[in-house]
Amino acid sequence: MFSFFKKKVTPAPAAPVEPTPAEASEQAPALSDDELERAALAAAPEPEAVPGPAPVEVAPVAEVPAVAEPRSRWLDRLKLGLRKTGSSITQVFTGTKIDDALYEDLESALLVADAGVGATQYLLQDLKRRVKEAKATEPAVVKALLADAVAELLAPLQKPLVIGQQTPTVVMVAGVNGAGKTTTIGKLTRHLAESDRRVLLAAADTFRAAAREQLAVWADRNRVEIVSQQGGDPAAVSFDAVTAGRARGCDVVIADTAGRLPTQLHLMDELKKIKRTIGKAQEGAPHEVLLVIDGNTGQNALAQVKAFDAALGLTGLIVTKLDGTAKGGVLAAIARWCAEQGRVVPVYFIGVGERLEDLQTFDAREFANALLG
Image 1 (cartoon, rainbow, N blue to C red):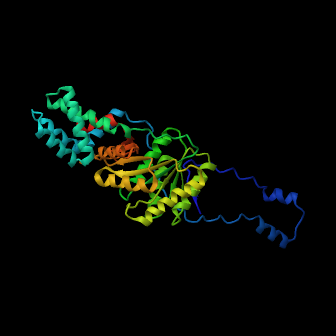
Image 2: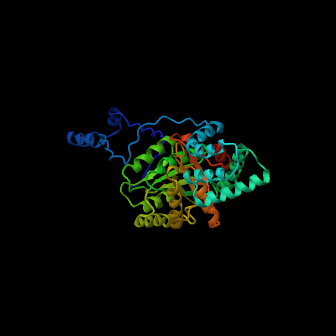
Image 3: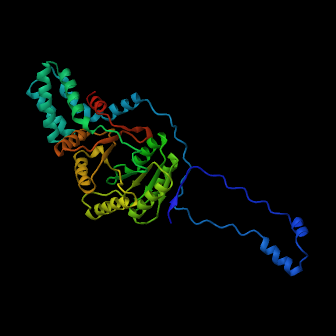
C-alpha cells in the first residue's frame, strides 16, 4: 500500500446530528422489549477503527524561514569552504618572480587540488598565453589571470535547472552512498517549494535502511507530499509516484534512488530499470537525471560522473561538501572532460554546509574568485 503524506491537514467534516432517544421514540411506533433492545444495539456507535501502523512516523519539525539569504553571505561561506583548496594554489603567487619555477609549483598545486592532468595542462597553457598577452610582471596579476582562466573553463557548466516545460517535470536523482543524495533532495525541494512549485517525492531508495524515513522528514520540513512503500520494488515506487504526480497536478516529481557504487553492475542495472519504468509512466520522462557527487572525493567524483553518465545519460550534477575539502579542483577536471566529450553535464547546484541555505546555484565566476581569493 502506497502512502501519500501531506503536511496541510484538512479539517474533518462535521458529523451529522442524530435525533435524541426521546425524539426517536416519538417518531417511531411502539416496540416490544426485545425489539427495543435490538434497536438500541443497532443504534450504538461502531467501535472506532484502530488504524494500522503508519509507514513513516515523522516528528514535528520547526518551520524553516522562507526568507532567502543574501548572496553575499553565501559567497563568504563558499570562500571559507574552498580555503583549503585555494590556499595551496594561492601560496604559489607569494613570490616576486614569474618564471618556470612558479609554473611548476602551480602545476603541483593544481594536481594536489585534484584538477586532473588534462585540466591542469590546459590551465597552464591558457595562463601562459594570458600572461604574454597582458605582459604581466607581477605574481598578483598572474593570479588574477588564473582566476579568469578557471572561470572561462567552468563557464559551460553554469546552466540553470529548468522546471515547468513538462508537467510534471520528473527528476531522477542518483549517487553513491554517503554523497549526501537524500539531504540534497530535501534542499532542492526547498528551492522549488519557495518558487511556488508543487513537489511530490518518491522514496525509491528501498535498499537502504531508514532512507524512506529520512526522506519523509525532509518532506515534512518542506510541507510536500511523499509516495513510499516499505520493502517494495523501487521501479514500482517511481512509477506510482509519477502517475500520482500527474493525477494530482504536481509541478515536479523527484525520485530518490538507492546509493550504489558504479562497480555494482547489478545495482546499476536496477537504476536503468527505474529510468525505463519512469518513461512508461510519462512519455519523455525522466526529464532530468541528476548525479550527486561528494566534492571531497576528488578524482573519484569524476570517475562516478563517467560511469553514471554511461549508464543513465546524465543531464546535470550537484556537488556537495565543498566546505573543508582540499580537492575542489575536481570541477575543473569535470569541465575539461565535458569539453573533450563535446557535450556538457552542467553543475546545477553546489553545497558548502548542512543548512538548507547552503545549497546554491553554481556560478563559474563566483567559484573561481572564491577559489583564488
